[in-house]
Length: 447
Image 1: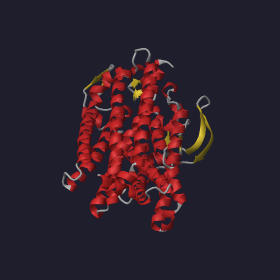
Image 2: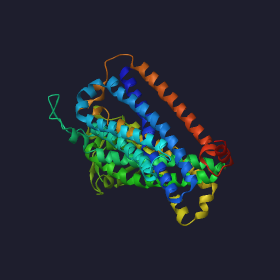
Image 3: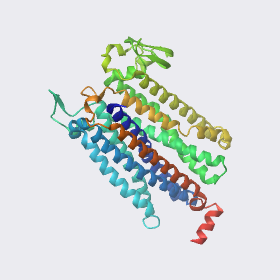
Image 4: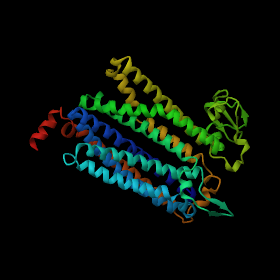
């Protein structure tokens, strides 16, 4: 493995892990706050236990997210010094603000965890809600920095120099809103389905059924919001990509020939050498409509761009197809669940519905990882789109492959630790969190 490939692999691996931790940190506090609100409104002790259980999970994943995020910050400077040398002064503002949001989140989560029976009940609730707001803000600010890489703004590039720097324009570049919106919606979808699937599993095992049923309903509600919002945010993001990065759009669809009334491609295997796609299902004119709401709009093909500026077409296309596939599956599951709520309430008690959510547990995160693959790989060969190539930004230091192996080991170890801690939390539900369980009452008497 050469150093350039090792550097890219390390960033891909680190981002792949961190994105899961960060998305959970963006969404789980809102589930926690909603359960807490239900407790305050109903005085049902089960919601109080659920809030406490979820808050411990939030704390665990907040800590691991902080570790992985810190590692990523170091990696940017260590692996891509040329990029940071020029880009740091331009898009440093969202990172600085993200640090502020992180500190607010840390303070709020401390207040919430140790504020039970110490603060005014609604101030205590607000602390939990603030954890969610600051976590969401952190995610949006980081995405703003990434969006700048896809849509550079806030400077003039003259003779290799970055002049007239405007951090505000850099932060609010043309890509930040579409990317931030789609990322936030996807985070709600992925985390909602993952949490719902986990509690569905516990219901199927007949463990603390009432407790896990209430948890499942809250998580499924958030999952539906994300699932139904994803096509809308995805449409906004796709239109933005078509305008700013037509070559990325062409790679997403393996669209080689420029044409009006371009077809939307489902499946298929791209052949970059022959500049064609095989075995694909093509829906006439739909791609043109998705790009501009006009069935006859011209969509540029890959052949219109220099060959050395093509991203890896097969990787981008397959990732896009995976994202779309799992997104559609989650929408269908959401529609079935809504139908059950309004017209077939008896379905809510059926095992097949719970098993469906159980199977769908990883779907959101698979789609999320695929979407980020489209975003990052689709930008190649540029680290700053149209300005700096990725190969020109990598560190000249040798031995990067050993750094890749080390960081991989750290992230894998961290994942096992998280699984162990969260599994232990689930096992403690009867004793610590479910007031209807005899073990909980026995524990309280001892205390």
